[in-house]
Image 1 (cartoon, rainbow, N blue to C red):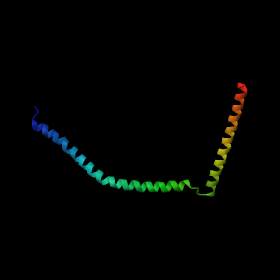
Image 2 (cartoon, rainbow, N blue to C red):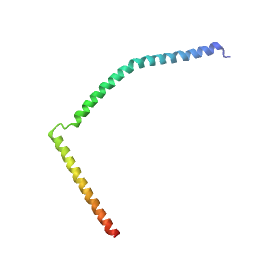
Image 3 (spheres, rainbow, N blue to C red):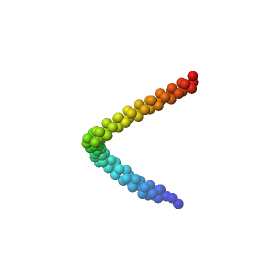
Image 4 (spheres, rainbow, N blue to C red):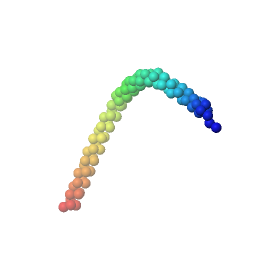
Length: 96
């Protein structure tokens, strides 16, 4: 037979640990949140500085590689345009 004392005892057995976990979580969040926000800002500054430094050419070779890449891109683009013109000419001659 279940008595009210057993019901209350079971409820208290489960309720007290749950409340302890909730209180510890609440206290920890108030302690950890400010630290985490300050740390995230510091990490973002470090990341921004690293990213800016990594985008700048470091040696003469980097600048030359960038220039060569731009030249190759322009050559490929002009070749693509010539091929498209030839295809257009062939299409027009077939349609005529």
